[in-house]
Structure formats: C-alpha cells, structure tokens
Image 1 (cartoon, helix red, strand yellow):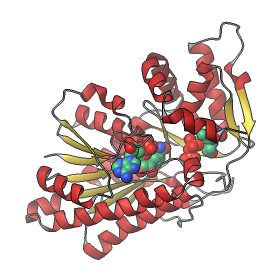
Image 2 (cartoon, helix red, strand yellow):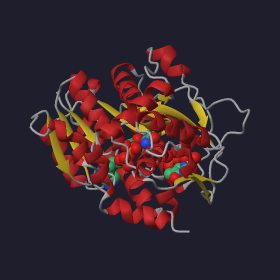
Image 3 (cartoon, protein in one colour):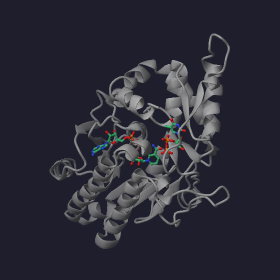
Length: 353
Ligand code: NAD
Ligand code: TYD
C-alpha cells in the first residue's frame, strides 16, 4: 500500500520520503510543484528506485489529485506542501494563502471524496496527516509556559496565519465529515537538505563563503530546534498510533536564542573547517534590521506525544547541529547547486540595505 506525500521535494518532505523508504519501504507517490524550495537533488538516492513515484504538480489542481488518488489508492496522505518562509510571506502573502489555505482545502476535498468511496476496511485505515507548525500559537513572553495543544491560536505573520487557517480546515473536515485526520505542530527543524534562506543553513553556507551572518535585531528571539530526522520519526509514529482528530505538538526540548545558535554554528565550523588566518567565523556576524512583527519566543511542550505515543527526539541539539554542519561540509555540490538560480535573487532582495 502506497502513501501520497505532498511537498516531498522540500526540506522536511524529502527527508521524510528518504526516511520512509529506509524504515517502512512501501511506495511513496510524491506530489510537488517544485517551487524555488523544491529540489529533486535531495532525492537523488532514489533516482532508480521504483518505490518513489514523483509527480510534478500543484496541490490546488483538484483534477490531478483525484487522478492520483484513483490511480494509486494510497492508504494515507502526508501533507507537507506549503510556502514556508516567514520573510517571504511578509513580502508576498498571496502565494501563502493560495498554497497553504486553498491548497489544503483542495486536498481535503479530494481526500474526502476518495475516502468516502472506499470499502469499509480501507476507509477505517485511511489517514490524512497534516504537518503544521508551532508558529500558529503566536509569541510567548520570557516566563510563559511552553505551548500545549490547547494553547489558543494567535498567529502573527502571513505564514503562520495561513498555516493556522489550514489547521482549522483540517479540524473542521474531521468534525463535520468524519475525515480521519491527524495534525502535528512542530518547532523549527534543521538538518540535511535545508534551503539556505533559513537561519541555520544560511549561517553555515555564508560562514564558509566568507559572507556576513545576518542576525535580525538583537538576536535574542527564542526558538525550539528539532533535528529533521526526529520530526520524520514523530510523523511516522503519529501516523501509526495517533488518535483521530487529535493534534500533537512535536519539539526538541531545545529552546535557544538566535544569537546562541549562530555562535554555536560558528564554533563548530571553526573546529571542522578552521579559517587559514585562525580567526573565528563569528567575526562575520552582522546585526541587521529586525523582521516586522518578529515573534519573540516559541517553546513547545511535547509531553503529550511522549505520554500517549512514546515518542521523544533521539538527537540533542549538540549532536544534531554537529551532524548538520558536517553534512554541509561533506556535500559541497548540493550547497553550490542550491545557491545558484532563484536563491541568489532572493538573498539579494532580502538583504539589500
Ligand atoms: P519547504 O519550503 O522546504 O518545502 C515546501 C515544498 O512544498 C517544496 O518542495 C515546494 O516545491 C512544495 N510546494 C509549495 N507549494 C506547492 C504547491 N502549491 N503544490 C505542490 N507543492 C508545493 O518547507 P519545509 O520546511 O520542508 O516544511 C514542510 C512543511 O512543514 C510545511 O507545511 C511547513 O509549514 C511545516 N513545518 C516546517 C517547519 C520548519 O522548521 N521548516 C517546522 C514545522 C512545520
Ligand atoms: P527562520 O529560520 O526563518 O525560521 P522561523 O522564522 O520560521 O522561525 O528564522 C529563525 C529565527 O532566526 C527567527 O527568529 C528569525 C531569525 N533569523 C535571523 O536572525 N537572521 C536570518 O538571516 C534569518 C533567515 C532568520
């Protein structure tokens, strides 16, 4: 029995597809539009593997999704496809509403039609797993308790608002139509195949290139960080044993201010690829203008998924970030290729002072 993955050429989706083939081994139909963030090089290891069926297409294309569901009859849909970068959502929110809200709606409607037509046993086993973010909960004060699953939704950016809207649609399709959904709300991921517009890969790539390491505002904004392969194992676990209609917060128990993250990365690159002149990469740190409406702190209470499903992250931040820096050093071709094309245009626009 196959699964249908959307957005499986992006950062987390491609890690998930690789992880699924390695751990489960059943076929994956991978529907991805290949926006600037989709990179088939991430899946190069599956090039000749018949278990990976790649389809270039848009989650807003109902006819295409109907056709894929009829043809492959997946037992689950794992929905990653989204516009995912907060800064891009500030410059151009329209695409976020289209993909994240309209796309999720289209997928839910197609899933509902398909699921309704299934025989009882397959209907009972079908799952729609929606991959979402902790950003839907808004911003915490320094001493506030971390987000639980019952924290009110208070999204502050066009990105988080569009993800919150998609979460609400998923919830409503369960309550109204009985669609067997599961939702995960995860904190910031890092690891291999991360597009270098996000903080950690941008810091690694810019450090190695001798470029400035941009830190927004005072750099004291706090995020929780999870190694991407731990996110993949959490999704597999929720798919396997999650209670229908429930949401599960997924986090790494690794709350850190951005400036600490950048310094940690610099120290590791200093160790693993020292500069010939002996100075630290941290001398490249540059404070730049803050992001408008920048959320001050996210923190995840991931006790529910541990208590109910027995999931905990395998990596600490120290082990995960070391693997991540080493991966970038070991994959210079991937880094070089991802830096060509659209990515350069975007970086030039975002950091033009
Ligand atoms: P990403 O931007 O790296 O990848 C998104 C993928 O979706 C790309 O391959 C892109 O081509 C594809 N896509 C975009 N629009 C599409 C459309 N209309 N139709 C089909 N495919 C389309 O994102 P990511 O970081 O891998 O995030 C994946 C999911 O996980 C998103 O839903 C995101 O909200 C969520 N999430 C991300 C993080 C994080 O730290 N990156 C944390 C929690 C949750
Ligand atoms: P990012 O990786 O864009 O993820 P998100 O906004 O979804 O949390 O950013 C992580 C944090 O790092 C966030 O507080 C913004 C900050 N940041 C910088 O300070 N400099 C940068 O160049 C980027 C991309 C992000």
